[in-house]
Amino acid sequence: MILADGPAGLRLQPHFKTKKDGTLLPGGEVMGDAYTPFNPNIDEKEVDNYYQYCTAIPIGWALAQSWNTELVEKAGDMVGSEMEQFHVDLWLAPALNIHRNPLCGRNFEYYSEDPYVSGKIAAAMTKGVQKHRGKGTTIKHFAVNNQEDNRYFVNAHVSERALREIYLKGFEIAVREAQPLSIMTSYMAPISSFASSFSSAFSSSFARIPTYSMVSSEIIFAIFLILSAFFPAMALICSYHVGTMWSL
Image 1 (cartoon, rainbow, N blue to C red):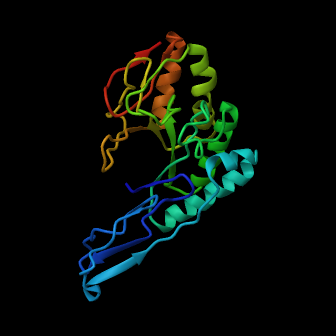
Image 2: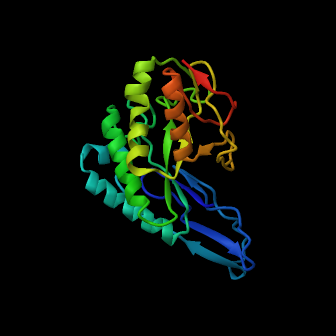
Image 3: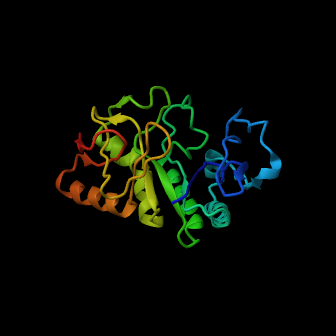
């Protein structure tokens, strides 16, 4: 399974080199302003060069400010087309955490302070991407991931009402309306316990630490609804750390 990050379209390494036998050579990695150069001593006659450039779409909050779900779905359709072109299976987007604090370092890729707007825009983006057979979105970060400072260890205390009406509502809307192929989890420890990791359902470790875990959205939402019927204060989330459920 091939994964590509977002959020403004597919984020792929634009230039890479391989040996004639297909072995990938180090170099060419780009992350923000950081760039890893290729070995200057490479004999270009012995390698193949590959280039892959993707279309940049408007960033999340700009799309949400359009209030235009048809437009957002077209943007998702464009991303899905490029996923087919570059053989990408899952796009690690869209992100729909709440704009709780204007200082959050990733507000640019989150949609809104309004969970309804966030959910509707994420659903539209997902519908556009998943028009393409076998291609899927990864809505994130489930849930309460609303700050970047100390993001791996922050302990978020949230009331049941705020959790249901604000922080989980957008995810509920996106899942109900668009059935995203996967859900990426938050890093942090909501309500004093690290969110649960359902690795038996579906998990994937990336080539970095800490890892992400992902769970089939149909499975996690079904579990969430069933448990909520019996335990109104119960919410399930998945993450990379400890495999335990937490309750309010």
